[in-house]
Length: 248
Image (tube, rainbow, N blue to C red; front, side, top):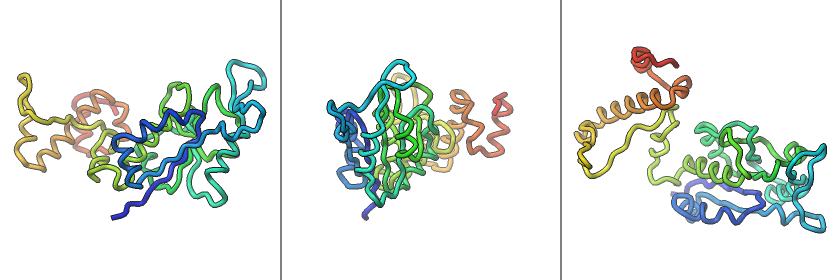
């Protein structure tokens, strides 16, 4: 069966940061199978000034440098062409935060273009004319958008059919239903005096599913109670949490 593919273009000043990440493990296999198509474009190749600069001092003063609009615009035009169908994304701290629902949404696109900022930021005119949206991977500062782009690609790719070995895998991972994942165990059955829970050994899949669900709810309540407000909980689960004094 031939799976639909996702094309991703990454605009960056540091393309050398990406090949080892995208060439290994699950992403490497997806690219090799043609399910994921990743292209790297060096923004510096589109600089038109004599010294091939891609940044300059900010108007109004301040520390650091700002990325020029012209090389970004030309690099974007180079990868999108005249019949672009997809989304142009700037990896920056002021955007919508990356989440499982957003990753699912992006995985359904035909083409993503990711713009990696650097230095003190990007000329706002480039963002206004060359970008459809801004996405953040968290409330912290990175030296550039390259690491954020890697995180986004890895997260999104898991929801493309054929990327993972099991089509059920992304449905059982942390945050998929608003909960942390349940505890996992493998061989040996006894390790340093600690036993695998008996319910996982009896072959009763209904009981296993119930146990895993209960552990996911309990773990989330203990470690990340903030997630419970948006989690998909049954009335019985809500009542059990109230009895333990958990607020959500």
